[in-house]
Length: 317
Picture 1 (cartoon, rainbow, N blue to C red):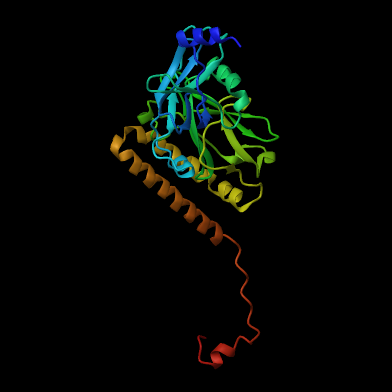
Picture 2: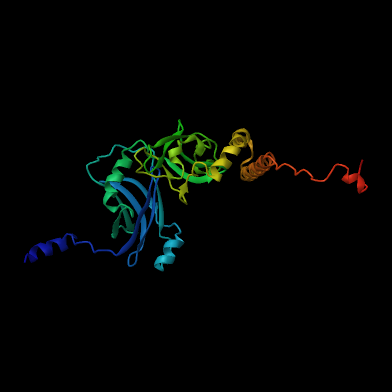
């Protein structure tokens, strides 16, 4: 046994790092942000750092509330993190593998974080993302609202609207241009005209009834986050018929509000939009009532009594 080598390693501080028991990882790998959570029972981890060799790409504190994680693990603290990515990178030597590390306050303890869904592909996807033109893009799928698939995507300081891709199993990806007005984006430092809305009627019938999602890239590696599954209404369903009936109202009434809203004071925009949504809701109810009123009514049954019968009972002559 080479005891001399061990003594030299201890002398120069080259001891093997202790294995840290931890849980967590990367939940969302997006062009503009990497988010997730990490918990280490015996080591207080303070921040996460994205490194390519010696180059520090981005850094963020581990201080985001995650009540779901704390409840599941019986943990007290704020184990979440949101690491914002820059839109541009300095010259980088790409031979080293990109790594996302969670470190203690003094940097002596660290763990390398991986994707919770695809741990074996973490390094490859990190490198692909950092080298792509998508870097810096943010976005979100709001869901099916007011008869359309809605959401937003963009980057700070963009000169052209972002393009994302609508995806569904067995279907060719379809591009979506994000150039529609969307409330609340100015607070994120993004252009307010970074929203998108898609009428399901604009899609081929083969998309009807399918679950859909959106991605920043055509290949579907980097998905836009969303809270719930989105399933398009099936062709011929009541939902699709309702969308078809009210699509003209949407086009006619919703767009002017988008044009006027930028001139409304910032503190009133949310209320303005809420009122507009309620107005559209009332419009749809009115349209539905009109549609029902136009249905052919059953013909009145002819009386089998002779015409003189009312006069006999003292009725009108």
